[in-house]
Length: 262
Image 1 (cartoon, rainbow, N blue to C red):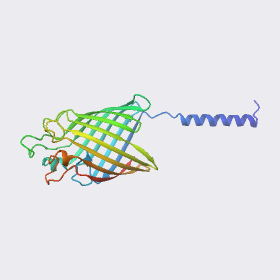
Image 2 (image 1 turned 60 degrees about the vertical axis):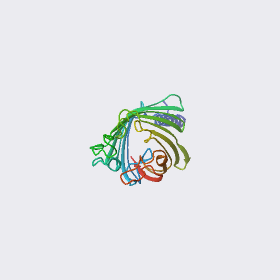
Image 3 (image 1 turned 30 degrees about the vertical axis):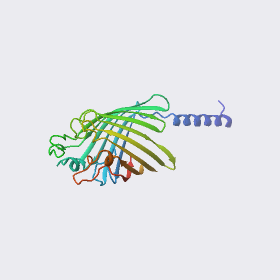
């Protein structure tokens, strides 16, 4: 077969097209593993201080399968078990979670899962400092369900047993509304409002928390956050959310964080 410049050009064009198609159609990996390490100036869980207004070091690990199934773990230092329940043990938190994410339509997604908050070795309740027999082991398990529409999300969580050490609190609930706005140049703004209901506490454990978080993605896995956080604990729950030093654990504050993901 005679090899002409025209045929050579056609062959090169075909090879280039095939290579381009191969690049755009690279197979999706079956799963991904992601890790991160970060620090925050004040660890807040649903608006309540977990580290006595001091910094926390936090680590995460996430496994995500392409079919929507996921597993993860989160770890942090904490102070609240000792400061709030006057326990002598319980300085760390380990969260284990798993669930499934899927789509109902192109814009509407859902997330169903289970999470357990573990405080290794904690003896919350042993001192019974908040009334005879009123406090138990702090470990807590919740199931949750969430719906996401574009940048908006709504989430419901419910405890399967006692909630964070409170006796007779099984079935405690948390309602979460939030949004995520991409404002460009790597910045996102996330407003949030939530409502915590703690069963068996005559309404004293119920409160609303709110926050506005500004995040900046610097690229290469590095990101930073600044959040204005507040609650209604002082007004709604009176002295309920106060530690052994009579500090309001839900007082308003600004939390700054830095995280590296890899």
